[in-house]
Length: 229
Image (cartoon, rainbow, N blue to C red):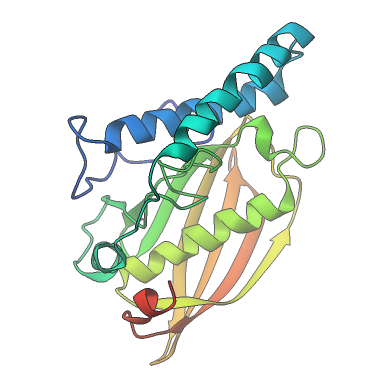
Protein backbone atom coordinates (compact mmCIF):
# COMPACT_ATOMS: atom_id res chain seq x y z
CA UNK A 1 0.00 0.00 0.00
CA UNK A 2 1.31 3.40 -0.94
CA UNK A 3 1.37 5.97 1.85
CA UNK A 4 1.34 9.67 1.06
CA UNK A 5 3.23 12.26 3.05
CA UNK A 6 1.43 13.46 6.11
CA UNK A 7 -1.77 11.48 5.59
CA UNK A 8 -2.46 7.80 5.25
CA UNK A 9 -4.66 5.02 6.48
CA UNK A 10 -4.39 1.25 6.67
CA UNK A 11 -7.94 1.11 5.32
CA UNK A 12 -9.22 1.22 1.78
CA UNK A 13 -10.78 4.67 1.79
CA UNK A 14 -11.80 7.74 3.72
CA UNK A 15 -14.51 7.44 6.33
CA UNK A 16 -17.85 8.81 5.16
CA UNK A 17 -18.99 12.12 6.59
CA UNK A 18 -22.64 13.08 6.90
CA UNK A 19 -22.17 16.17 4.72
CA UNK A 20 -19.44 14.91 2.38
CA UNK A 21 -19.65 15.51 -1.34
CA UNK A 22 -17.95 17.52 -4.04
CA UNK A 23 -21.22 19.29 -4.80
CA UNK A 24 -20.78 21.15 -1.49
CA UNK A 25 -17.87 22.77 0.30
CA UNK A 26 -16.34 19.68 1.93
CA UNK A 27 -14.43 18.32 -1.08
CA UNK A 28 -12.88 21.69 -1.99
CA UNK A 29 -12.05 22.39 1.66
CA UNK A 30 -10.23 19.07 1.98
CA UNK A 31 -8.31 19.58 -1.27
CA UNK A 32 -7.33 23.13 -0.31
CA UNK A 33 -6.03 21.94 3.07
CA UNK A 34 -4.03 19.15 1.41
CA UNK A 35 -2.50 21.63 -1.05
CA UNK A 36 -1.40 23.98 1.73
CA UNK A 37 0.13 21.09 3.70
CA UNK A 38 1.98 19.86 0.60
CA UNK A 39 3.40 23.34 -0.02
CA UNK A 40 4.67 23.61 3.54
CA UNK A 41 6.44 20.25 3.34
CA UNK A 42 7.91 21.10 -0.08
CA UNK A 43 9.32 24.44 1.08
CA UNK A 44 11.12 22.75 3.96
CA UNK A 45 12.24 19.64 2.09
CA UNK A 46 13.84 21.34 -0.90
CA UNK A 47 16.49 23.95 -1.56
CA UNK A 48 13.98 26.38 -3.02
CA UNK A 49 15.48 29.45 -4.69
CA UNK A 50 14.74 33.01 -3.59
CA UNK A 51 12.59 33.74 -6.62
CA UNK A 52 10.07 31.03 -5.78
CA UNK A 53 10.08 32.00 -2.11
CA UNK A 54 9.33 35.59 -3.05
CA UNK A 55 6.52 34.39 -5.31
CA UNK A 56 4.96 32.44 -2.46
CA UNK A 57 5.32 35.41 -0.13
CA UNK A 58 3.73 37.74 -2.70
CA UNK A 59 0.81 35.57 -3.81
CA UNK A 60 -0.44 33.85 -0.66
CA UNK A 61 -1.41 37.00 1.28
CA UNK A 62 -4.06 37.82 -1.33
CA UNK A 63 -5.64 34.40 -0.84
CA UNK A 64 -5.44 34.86 2.91
CA UNK A 65 -7.27 38.18 2.68
CA UNK A 66 -9.99 36.57 0.58
CA UNK A 67 -10.45 33.85 3.19
CA UNK A 68 -10.59 36.39 5.99
CA UNK A 69 -13.39 38.28 4.23
CA UNK A 70 -15.65 35.23 4.45
CA UNK A 71 -18.00 34.86 7.40
CA UNK A 72 -16.92 32.88 10.46
CA UNK A 73 -17.49 29.13 10.55
CA UNK A 74 -19.69 27.64 13.27
CA UNK A 75 -18.99 24.05 14.28
CA UNK A 76 -22.00 21.90 15.15
CA UNK A 77 -20.91 20.24 18.39
CA UNK A 78 -24.05 18.09 18.54
CA UNK A 79 -23.18 16.52 15.19
CA UNK A 80 -19.54 16.14 16.28
CA UNK A 81 -20.57 14.29 19.46
CA UNK A 82 -22.92 12.04 17.52
CA UNK A 83 -20.17 11.11 15.06
CA UNK A 84 -17.71 10.28 17.84
CA UNK A 85 -19.98 8.34 20.20
CA UNK A 86 -23.38 7.85 18.60
CA UNK A 87 -22.88 4.53 16.82
CA UNK A 88 -20.84 1.35 16.90
CA UNK A 89 -17.74 1.30 14.64
CA UNK A 90 -17.26 -1.79 12.48
CA UNK A 91 -14.00 -3.72 12.30
CA UNK A 92 -11.49 -2.27 9.79
CA UNK A 93 -13.69 0.81 9.49
CA UNK A 94 -11.93 4.18 9.57
CA UNK A 95 -12.83 5.96 12.80
CA UNK A 96 -14.03 9.55 12.53
CA UNK A 97 -13.26 12.28 15.02
CA UNK A 98 -13.68 15.75 13.59
CA UNK A 99 -12.52 17.23 10.33
CA UNK A 100 -10.72 20.23 11.85
CA UNK A 101 -8.41 18.21 14.15
CA UNK A 102 -4.73 19.20 13.91
CA UNK A 103 -3.66 15.53 13.88
CA UNK A 104 -6.38 13.72 11.92
CA UNK A 105 -8.46 16.47 10.34
CA UNK A 106 -8.55 16.46 6.52
CA UNK A 107 -9.74 20.08 6.62
CA UNK A 108 -6.80 21.33 8.69
CA UNK A 109 -4.12 22.88 6.43
CA UNK A 110 -1.58 22.83 9.29
CA UNK A 111 -2.31 19.27 10.38
CA UNK A 112 -0.81 15.82 10.00
CA UNK A 113 -3.86 14.27 8.33
CA UNK A 114 -3.44 10.80 9.84
CA UNK A 115 -6.37 8.38 9.47
CA UNK A 116 -7.09 5.63 11.99
CA UNK A 117 -9.19 2.47 11.69
CA UNK A 118 -10.62 -0.03 14.12
CA UNK A 119 -8.79 -3.36 14.37
CA UNK A 120 -10.84 -5.58 16.65
CA UNK A 121 -10.86 -3.80 20.00
CA UNK A 122 -7.67 -1.94 19.06
CA UNK A 123 -6.92 0.89 16.63
CA UNK A 124 -4.27 1.05 13.90
CA UNK A 125 -2.85 3.63 11.52
CA UNK A 126 0.00 4.25 9.10
CA UNK A 127 1.51 7.61 8.19
CA UNK A 128 4.55 9.22 6.62
CA UNK A 129 5.49 12.49 8.33
CA UNK A 130 6.68 15.25 6.03
CA UNK A 131 9.55 17.63 6.69
CA UNK A 132 7.33 20.26 8.29
CA UNK A 133 7.19 17.98 11.34
CA UNK A 134 10.96 17.68 11.78
CA UNK A 135 12.75 18.41 15.02
CA UNK A 136 16.37 17.47 14.43
CA UNK A 137 17.38 16.72 10.82
CA UNK A 138 15.57 13.66 9.55
CA UNK A 139 13.63 13.03 12.76
CA UNK A 140 10.16 14.01 13.91
CA UNK A 141 9.72 16.60 16.64
CA UNK A 142 8.93 14.90 19.95
CA UNK A 143 5.79 16.98 20.37
CA UNK A 144 4.47 15.71 17.06
CA UNK A 145 5.08 12.12 18.18
CA UNK A 146 3.16 12.85 21.40
CA UNK A 147 0.31 14.36 19.38
CA UNK A 148 0.14 11.22 17.24
CA UNK A 149 -0.28 9.13 20.38
CA UNK A 150 -2.87 11.45 21.90
CA UNK A 151 -5.01 11.19 18.79
CA UNK A 152 -4.41 7.48 18.13
CA UNK A 153 -5.30 6.47 21.68
CA UNK A 154 -8.14 8.96 21.71
CA UNK A 155 -9.76 6.96 18.93
CA UNK A 156 -10.22 4.15 21.43
CA UNK A 157 -12.80 6.37 23.10
CA UNK A 158 -14.89 6.21 19.94
CA UNK A 159 -14.36 2.48 19.42
CA UNK A 160 -15.38 1.73 23.01
CA UNK A 161 -17.98 4.55 23.12
CA UNK A 162 -16.38 6.05 26.21
CA UNK A 163 -16.69 9.88 26.16
CA UNK A 164 -13.62 11.25 27.92
CA UNK A 165 -10.80 13.77 27.96
CA UNK A 166 -7.09 12.98 28.18
CA UNK A 167 -6.10 12.87 31.85
CA UNK A 168 -2.46 11.80 31.46
CA UNK A 169 -0.16 10.93 28.57
CA UNK A 170 3.34 9.51 29.01
CA UNK A 171 5.56 9.01 25.95
CA UNK A 172 8.81 7.05 25.89
CA UNK A 173 11.15 7.80 22.99
CA UNK A 174 13.17 4.65 22.37
CA UNK A 175 14.95 6.03 19.31
CA UNK A 176 14.39 8.88 16.84
CA UNK A 177 11.12 8.72 14.91
CA UNK A 178 12.05 9.42 11.28
CA UNK A 179 10.31 11.65 8.78
CA UNK A 180 9.78 10.44 5.21
CA UNK A 181 9.44 6.85 6.46
CA UNK A 182 6.31 4.78 6.95
CA UNK A 183 5.24 4.72 10.59
CA UNK A 184 2.99 1.91 11.83
CA UNK A 185 0.87 2.86 14.85
CA UNK A 186 -1.24 0.69 17.11
CA UNK A 187 -3.17 1.35 20.31
CA UNK A 188 -5.25 -0.74 22.68
CA UNK A 189 -7.07 -0.65 26.00
CA UNK A 190 -5.36 -2.30 28.96
CA UNK A 191 -7.84 -1.45 31.71
CA UNK A 192 -11.01 0.42 32.48
CA UNK A 193 -13.31 1.28 35.32
CA UNK A 194 -16.42 3.38 35.57
CA UNK A 195 -14.47 6.61 35.27
CA UNK A 196 -11.17 5.82 33.50
CA UNK A 197 -9.93 4.16 30.31
CA UNK A 198 -6.28 3.06 30.43
CA UNK A 199 -4.51 2.63 27.10
CA UNK A 200 -1.11 1.89 25.56
CA UNK A 201 0.30 2.49 22.12
CA UNK A 202 3.39 2.04 20.00
CA UNK A 203 4.98 3.33 16.82
CA UNK A 204 7.11 1.01 14.70
CA UNK A 205 9.34 1.56 11.68
CA UNK A 206 10.21 -1.58 9.71
CA UNK A 207 9.10 -3.63 12.71
CA UNK A 208 11.31 -1.73 15.17
CA UNK A 209 9.65 0.11 18.06
CA UNK A 210 10.65 3.77 18.05
CA UNK A 211 8.20 5.12 20.64
CA UNK A 212 5.60 3.87 23.13
CA UNK A 213 2.97 5.62 25.19
CA UNK A 214 0.54 5.18 28.05
CA UNK A 215 -2.56 7.33 28.38
CA UNK A 216 -5.40 7.55 30.86
CA UNK A 217 -8.69 9.10 29.77
CA UNK A 218 -11.23 10.45 32.25
CA UNK A 219 -14.90 9.90 31.46
CA UNK A 220 -17.14 12.91 31.00
CA UNK A 221 -20.76 13.47 30.12
CA UNK A 222 -20.73 13.74 26.32
CA UNK A 223 -22.89 16.86 26.65
CA UNK A 224 -19.85 18.63 28.11
CA UNK A 225 -18.28 18.69 24.68
CA UNK A 226 -20.91 21.25 23.78
CA UNK A 227 -20.78 23.01 27.15
CA UNK A 228 -16.99 23.46 26.99
CA UNK A 229 -16.78 24.53 23.34
